[in-house]
Image (tube, rainbow over all chains, first blue to last red; front, side, top):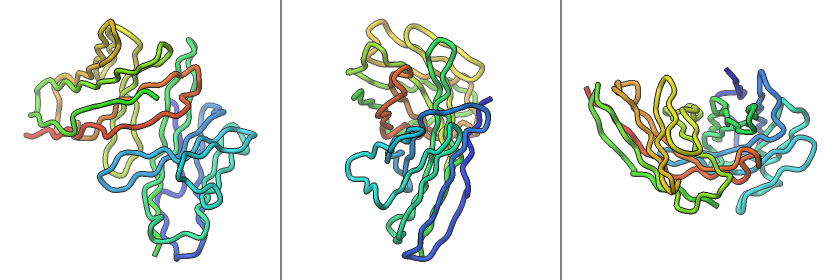
Amino acid sequence: GAVVSQHPSRVICKSGTSVKIECRSLDFQATTMFWYRQFPKQSLMLMATSNEGSKATYEQGVEKDKFLINHASLTLSTLTVTSAHPEDSSFYICSAMRRGSSNTGELFFGEGSRLTVL
Amino acid sequence: LAKTTQPISMDSYEGQEVNITCSHNNIATNDYITWYQQFPSQGPRFIIQGYKTKVTNEVASLFIPADRKSSTLSLPRVSLSDTAVYYCLVGDPSGGYNKLIFGAGTRLAVHP
């Protein structure tokens, strides 16, 4: 079946540094990918919609200059957390949609990336 | 935006059938209903998707009444490994699932 892969799965960084998380659709092309953040015991919170070849659309309250999203190809979107702080520590999850033959679509999620900022 | 409401938590025992109901009163005409399962520290995993009536696959069934304002995920004969959080989402796949919002989900605990 379709697979979405994230890398790295875990990352620890120092406060003030930047961290890049990759999201790849391994066996299908995804014009749209989504980035979520999830804190412990909470639901997924949509951060932004990543569109191939255009600027990402950010949800209200999400700083676009802090969470840089680049969707340079049909199989890769990246999220860069710039000048990370401890409060940015979270579980970041991406998803990509594969369109079905009847114009339905399944959202496939990556394994998630746990960011810890010291 | 189609908002979903689910029970916060449910408990069951191995071998029982579990039914989780989701309310989505504002579902739009083009919206599909999709259920996902999430284990701790993992991304959500697709379970089932439907538009109306009943859909069944190898792991679950999805019941959708005619008015589509709710849906019920049915897990037959659950096992301990089915302990997870279950989310129902509504969205229009032809529209790219724009603004797909997760609700709180239902935390299912399966006991021996």
